[in-house]
Image 1 (cartoon, rainbow, N blue to C red):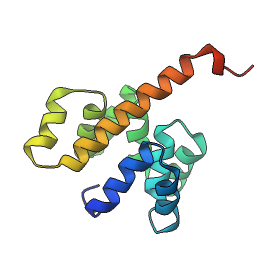
Image 2 (cartoon, helix red, strand yellow):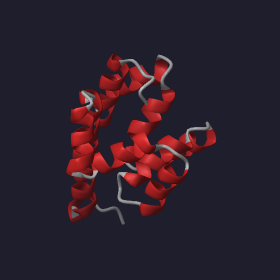
Image 3 (cartoon, rainbow, N blue to C red):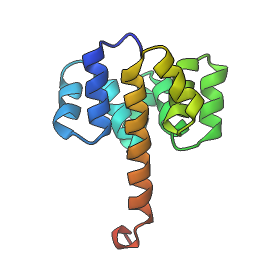
Image 4 (cartoon, rainbow, N blue to C red):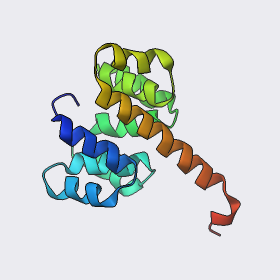
Length: 135
């Protein structure tokens, strides 16, 4: 992920925060994988499938890992996606991983981790709200 320009990473953090205008900007300006990543973090199966079909399994694994999927976390490690593994752990609130980003002045990834953490928290709350359950 470090190959993306900082402004694109900031846009990703906003898309994760459900800014649909930024999400569509990413989608229409050469970053469909980041738009899919943001959507898949919100449990959008179509976006997850797109990541898998379009050769972004590492981003697909990230979307599962931030939801505490230990197999996805293991896959990131075994396939040498240590950076994404660290981002996953930071998104889960692991202080050591959050500090790793701070220590390396990778504040944009620290911000992404916090946005993911908040998005997952909101989604869990939404999924647990019986008023929103579909029958």
